[in-house]
Length: 308
Image: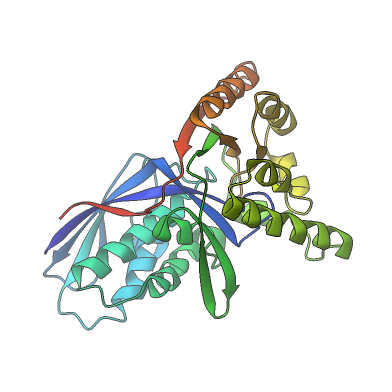
Protein backbone atom coordinates (compact mmCIF):
# COMPACT_ATOMS: atom_id res chain seq x y z
CA UNK A 1 0.00 0.00 0.00
CA UNK A 2 1.52 3.30 -1.12
CA UNK A 3 -1.35 5.73 -0.53
CA UNK A 4 -4.25 6.12 1.88
CA UNK A 5 -7.22 8.49 2.14
CA UNK A 6 -8.81 9.15 5.52
CA UNK A 7 -11.81 10.87 7.08
CA UNK A 8 -10.64 12.43 10.34
CA UNK A 9 -13.67 13.59 12.36
CA UNK A 10 -14.39 16.78 14.24
CA UNK A 11 -14.71 16.49 18.00
CA UNK A 12 -16.14 18.36 20.96
CA UNK A 13 -13.74 18.60 23.88
CA UNK A 14 -14.25 19.41 27.57
CA UNK A 15 -18.02 18.74 27.48
CA UNK A 16 -18.49 21.46 30.10
CA UNK A 17 -17.27 19.69 33.26
CA UNK A 18 -14.34 17.74 31.75
CA UNK A 19 -11.72 20.38 30.92
CA UNK A 20 -8.79 18.73 29.09
CA UNK A 21 -10.02 15.21 29.94
CA UNK A 22 -13.33 14.61 28.13
CA UNK A 23 -14.13 14.50 24.43
CA UNK A 24 -16.87 13.37 22.06
CA UNK A 25 -16.57 12.30 18.41
CA UNK A 26 -18.80 13.81 15.71
CA UNK A 27 -20.14 12.03 12.66
CA UNK A 28 -21.00 14.59 10.01
CA UNK A 29 -18.02 16.98 10.12
CA UNK A 30 -14.38 16.19 9.43
CA UNK A 31 -11.25 16.64 7.33
CA UNK A 32 -10.10 14.47 4.47
CA UNK A 33 -6.42 13.59 4.43
CA UNK A 34 -4.39 11.84 1.75
CA UNK A 35 -0.97 10.42 2.59
CA UNK A 36 1.35 8.73 0.11
CA UNK A 37 4.85 7.32 0.15
CA UNK A 38 7.52 9.21 -1.73
CA UNK A 39 11.08 8.24 -2.64
CA UNK A 40 12.43 11.39 -1.01
CA UNK A 41 13.03 10.99 2.72
CA UNK A 42 11.14 13.33 5.08
CA UNK A 43 7.63 14.77 5.57
CA UNK A 44 6.12 17.14 2.99
CA UNK A 45 2.81 19.02 3.03
CA UNK A 46 1.96 19.25 -0.68
CA UNK A 47 -1.69 20.38 -0.86
CA UNK A 48 -3.93 22.33 1.53
CA UNK A 49 -7.48 23.19 0.53
CA UNK A 50 -10.52 24.53 2.36
CA UNK A 51 -8.91 26.72 5.01
CA UNK A 52 -5.48 28.27 5.37
CA UNK A 53 -2.86 26.55 7.52
CA UNK A 54 0.94 26.76 7.06
CA UNK A 55 2.52 24.43 4.51
CA UNK A 56 5.88 24.41 6.27
CA UNK A 57 6.21 21.05 8.01
CA UNK A 58 7.62 22.49 11.24
CA UNK A 59 4.70 24.95 11.56
CA UNK A 60 1.88 22.63 10.51
CA UNK A 61 0.22 20.43 13.17
CA UNK A 62 -0.02 17.49 10.76
CA UNK A 63 3.60 17.98 9.75
CA UNK A 64 4.90 18.09 13.32
CA UNK A 65 2.84 15.05 14.34
CA UNK A 66 3.98 13.16 11.24
CA UNK A 67 7.59 14.06 11.97
CA UNK A 68 7.21 12.68 15.51
CA UNK A 69 6.17 9.23 14.30
CA UNK A 70 8.55 9.35 11.33
CA UNK A 71 11.56 9.82 13.62
CA UNK A 72 10.69 6.52 15.32
CA UNK A 73 10.71 4.65 12.01
CA UNK A 74 13.89 3.66 10.19
CA UNK A 75 12.71 4.33 6.64
CA UNK A 76 14.50 5.00 3.37
CA UNK A 77 11.49 6.88 2.00
CA UNK A 78 9.22 9.73 3.07
CA UNK A 79 5.60 10.87 2.93
CA UNK A 80 3.55 13.52 1.16
CA UNK A 81 0.44 14.81 2.95
CA UNK A 82 -2.59 16.47 1.38
CA UNK A 83 -5.01 18.26 3.74
CA UNK A 84 -8.58 19.00 2.71
CA UNK A 85 -9.68 21.16 5.64
CA UNK A 86 -13.42 21.08 6.17
CA UNK A 87 -12.94 22.07 9.82
CA UNK A 88 -12.00 25.72 10.15
CA UNK A 89 -8.93 26.38 12.33
CA UNK A 90 -9.87 28.13 15.56
CA UNK A 91 -13.43 26.80 15.43
CA UNK A 92 -13.33 24.85 18.69
CA UNK A 93 -14.32 21.52 17.13
CA UNK A 94 -10.91 19.93 16.78
CA UNK A 95 -9.44 21.27 13.54
CA UNK A 96 -5.83 20.82 14.64
CA UNK A 97 -6.47 17.41 16.21
CA UNK A 98 -8.12 16.11 13.04
CA UNK A 99 -5.01 17.03 11.03
CA UNK A 100 -2.53 15.70 13.58
CA UNK A 101 -4.42 12.47 14.13
CA UNK A 102 -4.91 11.86 10.42
CA UNK A 103 -1.19 12.25 9.78
CA UNK A 104 -0.02 9.73 12.38
CA UNK A 105 -2.85 7.28 11.77
CA UNK A 106 -2.19 7.24 8.03
CA UNK A 107 1.58 6.82 8.36
CA UNK A 108 1.05 4.00 10.85
CA UNK A 109 -1.27 2.24 8.39
CA UNK A 110 1.22 2.66 5.53
CA UNK A 111 4.07 1.21 7.60
CA UNK A 112 2.38 -1.91 8.93
CA UNK A 113 0.64 -0.67 12.10
CA UNK A 114 3.71 -0.83 14.31
CA UNK A 115 2.30 1.52 16.95
CA UNK A 116 -0.59 1.22 19.40
CA UNK A 117 -3.45 3.70 19.66
CA UNK A 118 -1.88 5.20 22.78
CA UNK A 119 1.39 5.65 20.85
CA UNK A 120 -0.48 7.45 18.07
CA UNK A 121 -2.09 9.82 20.56
CA UNK A 122 1.32 10.64 22.02
CA UNK A 123 2.73 11.43 18.57
CA UNK A 124 -0.30 13.52 17.62
CA UNK A 125 -0.05 15.51 20.85
CA UNK A 126 3.22 16.95 19.53
CA UNK A 127 1.22 18.48 16.69
CA UNK A 128 -1.51 19.76 19.01
CA UNK A 129 1.13 21.67 20.95
CA UNK A 130 1.87 23.73 17.82
CA UNK A 131 -1.70 25.04 17.82
CA UNK A 132 -2.28 25.54 21.53
CA UNK A 133 1.13 25.55 23.20
CA UNK A 134 0.00 22.58 25.26
CA UNK A 135 0.08 18.82 24.65
CA UNK A 136 -3.51 17.72 25.28
CA UNK A 137 -5.49 14.74 24.04
CA UNK A 138 -9.14 15.55 24.76
CA UNK A 139 -9.86 16.03 21.04
CA UNK A 140 -7.44 13.41 19.78
CA UNK A 141 -8.72 10.52 21.88
CA UNK A 142 -12.36 10.56 20.73
CA UNK A 143 -11.22 11.17 17.16
CA UNK A 144 -9.23 7.94 17.29
CA UNK A 145 -11.35 5.72 19.54
CA UNK A 146 -14.77 7.13 18.65
CA UNK A 147 -17.71 7.82 20.95
CA UNK A 148 -16.70 9.53 24.22
CA UNK A 149 -13.32 9.28 25.93
CA UNK A 150 -11.88 10.17 29.31
CA UNK A 151 -8.20 10.99 29.77
CA UNK A 152 -7.75 9.50 33.24
CA UNK A 153 -4.06 10.40 33.27
CA UNK A 154 -1.53 12.17 31.05
CA UNK A 155 1.54 10.73 32.79
CA UNK A 156 1.32 7.93 31.95
CA UNK A 157 -1.28 8.41 29.22
CA UNK A 158 -4.40 6.46 30.19
CA UNK A 159 -7.48 6.72 27.97
CA UNK A 160 -10.84 5.27 28.95
CA UNK A 161 -13.59 4.67 26.37
CA UNK A 162 -17.02 5.74 27.62
CA UNK A 163 -20.22 4.35 26.02
CA UNK A 164 -22.87 6.81 24.85
CA UNK A 165 -26.64 6.30 24.53
CA UNK A 166 -27.84 5.36 21.05
CA UNK A 167 -30.30 8.25 20.89
CA UNK A 168 -27.83 10.95 21.94
CA UNK A 169 -27.34 13.74 19.38
CA UNK A 170 -25.41 16.97 19.38
CA UNK A 171 -26.25 20.37 17.91
CA UNK A 172 -23.48 22.87 17.24
CA UNK A 173 -23.36 26.54 16.31
CA UNK A 174 -20.09 27.97 15.05
CA UNK A 175 -20.02 31.79 14.96
CA UNK A 176 -17.55 32.91 12.32
CA UNK A 177 -15.17 34.57 14.74
CA UNK A 178 -11.80 33.13 15.69
CA UNK A 179 -10.69 32.36 19.21
CA UNK A 180 -7.24 30.81 19.37
CA UNK A 181 -6.78 28.01 21.89
CA UNK A 182 -3.72 29.77 23.32
CA UNK A 183 -5.76 32.94 23.88
CA UNK A 184 -8.65 31.12 25.53
CA UNK A 185 -6.23 29.40 27.89
CA UNK A 186 -4.73 32.74 28.86
CA UNK A 187 -7.99 33.89 30.51
CA UNK A 188 -8.03 30.92 32.91
CA UNK A 189 -6.87 31.17 36.49
CA UNK A 190 -4.07 28.95 37.81
CA UNK A 191 -5.99 28.36 41.06
CA UNK A 192 -9.46 26.97 41.76
CA UNK A 193 -11.50 27.28 44.94
CA UNK A 194 -11.95 23.92 46.65
CA UNK A 195 -15.72 24.49 46.73
CA UNK A 196 -15.78 24.90 42.94
CA UNK A 197 -13.49 21.91 42.40
CA UNK A 198 -15.78 19.66 44.45
CA UNK A 199 -18.77 20.82 42.42
CA UNK A 200 -16.92 20.15 39.17
CA UNK A 201 -15.83 16.65 40.27
CA UNK A 202 -19.42 15.82 41.07
CA UNK A 203 -20.57 16.95 37.63
CA UNK A 204 -17.82 14.99 35.89
CA UNK A 205 -18.73 11.81 37.74
CA UNK A 206 -22.42 12.43 37.11
CA UNK A 207 -21.90 12.91 33.38
CA UNK A 208 -19.94 9.67 33.00
CA UNK A 209 -22.48 7.80 35.15
CA UNK A 210 -25.28 9.22 33.00
CA UNK A 211 -23.62 7.88 29.86
CA UNK A 212 -23.25 4.39 31.31
CA UNK A 213 -26.79 4.37 32.70
CA UNK A 214 -28.25 6.00 29.55
CA UNK A 215 -29.89 8.46 31.93
CA UNK A 216 -30.57 11.57 29.86
CA UNK A 217 -31.81 13.60 32.82
CA UNK A 218 -28.58 12.89 34.73
CA UNK A 219 -26.52 13.77 31.66
CA UNK A 220 -28.35 17.09 31.42
CA UNK A 221 -27.94 18.18 35.00
CA UNK A 222 -24.26 17.19 34.97
CA UNK A 223 -23.42 19.42 31.98
CA UNK A 224 -22.38 22.32 34.18
CA UNK A 225 -19.00 24.03 34.17
CA UNK A 226 -18.32 26.22 37.20
CA UNK A 227 -14.61 26.75 36.50
CA UNK A 228 -13.76 27.31 32.83
CA UNK A 229 -17.01 28.44 31.20
CA UNK A 230 -17.49 31.56 33.37
CA UNK A 231 -14.12 32.87 32.14
CA UNK A 232 -14.37 31.82 28.50
CA UNK A 233 -18.02 32.73 27.91
CA UNK A 234 -17.01 36.40 27.87
CA UNK A 235 -14.97 35.76 24.72
CA UNK A 236 -17.93 34.38 22.75
CA UNK A 237 -20.49 36.85 21.33
CA UNK A 238 -24.06 36.31 22.57
CA UNK A 239 -23.17 33.25 24.63
CA UNK A 240 -25.88 33.65 27.27
CA UNK A 241 -28.64 34.34 24.74
CA UNK A 242 -27.63 31.30 22.70
CA UNK A 243 -27.58 29.11 25.80
CA UNK A 244 -31.04 30.29 26.82
CA UNK A 245 -32.43 29.58 23.34
CA UNK A 246 -31.03 26.04 23.35
CA UNK A 247 -32.39 25.17 26.75
CA UNK A 248 -35.84 26.55 25.89
CA UNK A 249 -35.80 24.38 22.75
CA UNK A 250 -35.29 21.22 24.79
CA UNK A 251 -31.53 20.70 25.01
CA UNK A 252 -30.26 18.46 27.80
CA UNK A 253 -27.40 20.84 28.42
CA UNK A 254 -25.28 23.48 26.73
CA UNK A 255 -21.64 24.52 26.77
CA UNK A 256 -18.56 25.76 24.95
CA UNK A 257 -17.04 23.34 22.46
CA UNK A 258 -13.34 23.13 23.22
CA UNK A 259 -11.92 26.61 23.47
CA UNK A 260 -14.76 28.12 21.41
CA UNK A 261 -16.23 29.99 19.68
CA UNK A 262 -18.35 26.95 18.75
CA UNK A 263 -21.05 26.07 21.26
CA UNK A 264 -22.78 22.72 21.65
CA UNK A 265 -25.98 21.26 23.04
CA UNK A 266 -26.55 17.59 23.82
CA UNK A 267 -30.05 16.41 22.95
CA UNK A 268 -32.17 13.32 23.34
CA UNK A 269 -33.17 12.33 19.82
CA UNK A 270 -32.72 13.79 16.37
CA UNK A 271 -36.00 15.73 16.49
CA UNK A 272 -34.94 17.75 19.52
CA UNK A 273 -31.46 18.25 18.09
CA UNK A 274 -32.92 19.81 14.94
CA UNK A 275 -35.24 21.96 17.06
CA UNK A 276 -32.22 23.24 18.98
CA UNK A 277 -30.35 23.88 15.72
CA UNK A 278 -33.28 26.00 14.55
CA UNK A 279 -33.27 27.89 17.87
CA UNK A 280 -29.57 28.60 17.36
CA UNK A 281 -30.33 30.21 14.00
CA UNK A 282 -33.22 32.25 15.36
CA UNK A 283 -31.02 33.45 18.21
CA UNK A 284 -28.06 34.39 16.02
CA UNK A 285 -29.58 35.67 12.78
CA UNK A 286 -29.98 39.24 14.06
CA UNK A 287 -26.50 39.55 15.55
CA UNK A 288 -24.84 40.45 12.26
CA UNK A 289 -22.30 37.65 12.81
CA UNK A 290 -22.09 34.89 10.22
CA UNK A 291 -22.44 31.38 11.59
CA UNK A 292 -22.76 27.72 10.68
CA UNK A 293 -24.87 25.10 12.44
CA UNK A 294 -24.57 21.33 12.50
CA UNK A 295 -26.46 18.36 13.87
CA UNK A 296 -24.64 15.09 14.39
CA UNK A 297 -25.13 11.71 15.96
CA UNK A 298 -22.24 10.39 18.01
CA UNK A 299 -19.55 8.78 15.85
CA UNK A 300 -18.74 5.53 17.63
CA UNK A 301 -15.89 4.44 15.33
CA UNK A 302 -13.70 7.55 15.02
CA UNK A 303 -11.22 8.08 12.19
CA UNK A 304 -11.78 5.85 9.18
CA UNK A 305 -10.10 4.79 5.96
CA UNK A 306 -11.95 6.06 2.89
CA UNK A 307 -9.74 4.36 0.30
CA UNK A 308 -6.32 2.76 -0.01
